[in-house]
Length: 113
Image (cartoon, rainbow, N blue to C red; front, side, top):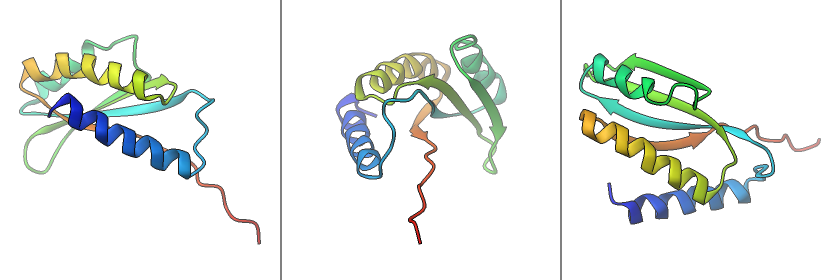
């Protein structure tokens, strides 16, 4: 996936988060996703971020591929996410993995009745 394309997607997501009232002043667990052809490669990639991540979860998908979800505590900024995505890609791609993007869980405030 091209860097320009990823930046465009990230800009769009961050803009929608801002419109939704996301609190950018707080540190959040940002989740980065990748898929690997086998468990060993997924575990190797997860191990490269030991000490840097909040959590790494590996699970087998229905199609036999392996999914890696890596959560990193950080501010949700375009620069910070882009920088980590580049580091993530530098580990994932040589292991035959494919980046699937990033996300963050956001609690929606309820409208008052």
